[in-house]
Length: 304
Image: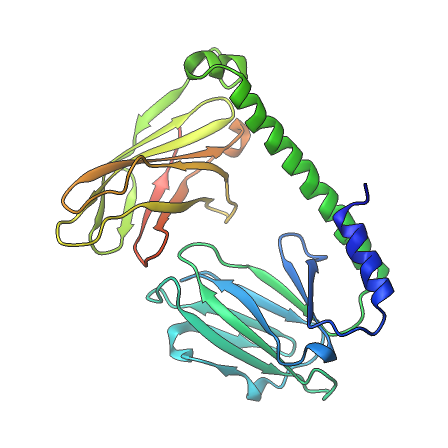
């Protein structure tokens, strides 16, 4: 069966001059996203995810009219740095998840499309670090890179599927850990982190107890979160575990039985994939809710 990337490439070649509003594909820069603009897609809006205190860089293949940049609620950004063909954005720490900002840029050469419009959407913890924006036709090298990226992503998906399938076919508990090679002769190591971690939480949340655990290939953080009386219930929707150099551990699950009601406490366990060589620390753990601005960040998280 042809790969999805091959089908996309074939479709583009057959389409010729057909109107395509906007094409998005894997970038030649690892970890970044590529947006392609066409004259037919003038006026289309590209969404870009930003996050409080995190940098997002937009890279263009054409010179910008630096003085003509339009950014809604510009005062909500601690840094807006416009270069000859780059824009670096750092939202301020007090923006709230779900906020949206319209960004309009104009190109100096006057070629179509003359402008590019972006919708910056605030997320509690995940920002797109680099986004490449192109108006010129793609080269064969970019298509080849897209195919390589698609194959790599397919391989990762197959590995994840195999791991999940194996987990459902093997016993749980300690027997399952032994069967899957999750334990070495030293077993699971744990430590209390409550006094060591640096805590930053939204109003109404507090981490009253924190434990860290490590097995051969996994780490987990067990957090007891208290929700102040008089506020809404809270449930963790997502998490990041970020190292000191900015790398993220792969989150496998965020486990919470029920929402934490006001005036009570509840456990949240975050499990991540971390071979022993990657567990150097310290890490920063951030948890956020699904449909609200409240998050909690624990710094200086280490594992035994």
